[in-house]
Amino acid sequence: MPFPLRKNIVAIAGYIPGEQPQDGEFIKLNTNENPYPPSPRVLRALHKAVNSSLRLYPDPLADGLRDLAASIYGGGVVNVLAGNGSDELLSILARCLVGKGDRVVYPVPTYTLYDTLIAIQEGEKVTVDYPSDFTLPEKIFSEMSSLTIVANPNSPSGTLIPLEQIERLARSVSGVLVIDEAYIDFAEGDGISALPIIHRHANLVVLRSFSKAFSLAGMRVGLAFAPEEIVQAMIKAKDSYNLSSLSLVSAAAALEDLPWMFRNVKRVQRTRKKLTQSLKRLGFAVYPSQANFVLVRKQGENLRGIYEKLKRRKILVRYFDVPGLRDTLRITVGTSTETDAFLRELAVILESM
Image (cartoon, rainbow, N blue to C red; front, side, top):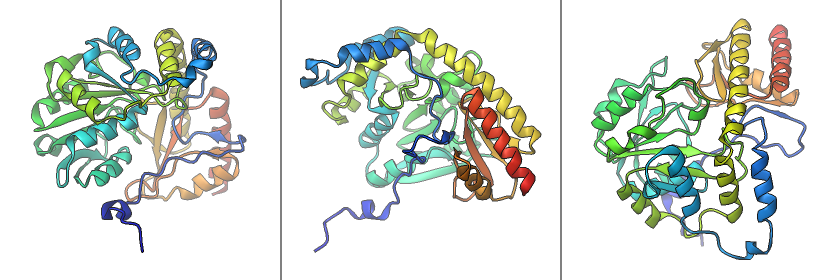
């Protein structure tokens, strides 16, 4: 007798993360990890925290981290919730806002985990195509839904939607608007984050991640900033102890050493500029990225072959085998040395084709 699994779970494909080779020999430019280490303060705090207190449960509400985050980013502790990465916070929001048949709107192509979370809840996915320049599609302003999601900067394009457009969208949507700012720290310029406008919009949620700019992908920590009513609802829907003691320690220590993060971000930005210029010289169209990766395109050409040739040379980039993206590759910004090695191998591959 088969297991009584829910039919919608059986039917979905599930989210497929980027490859994580275990042999350590690859140059990994496929999963948008920060190429630089976390702050030494994080490592010291973790060493200190590895003691007999690990027998105890962690703080279920992560109040220390929430208070620290509120003091840095604004608002009060009641406006912050910590999660097991921003992925878990997205899952909590789906539990809170999406029931069977509820509409969820977002522009595509974007982070495909959104598809999976909606399918689990049996919601109705309503996607709006980005135009070729990845500006916010006008149609999204008139779609009615319980939840609208915009990744900003977007993945896989790395492009950024101006704050005035985000604010216009917050005024236009019928339900909750989630701005997924996992990569926002790599963006250049002032007035680009939606965090300062949360107090003006009762339906606005902003997500942040420690995985990217803070170099803590292995610790799985994210933050949601939202009006108190939404945070209180999310608390009801989250797991009891959703963050480990060590995750809480590492995130707090990272926030206490912002200069370290900013230095690493500057290094990534410099290499991103060099990578973009070099890829253009090699004949690729490169989208103007404000993240720690770039999306390149050769219009109408399937780039799987280049991806596979790079992989044989122990260099991983991200190839998306889906309509509309088969002529693209997404390339994480690595160290200067890694980037140079990638560009050398790519040039050799292109010359041989």
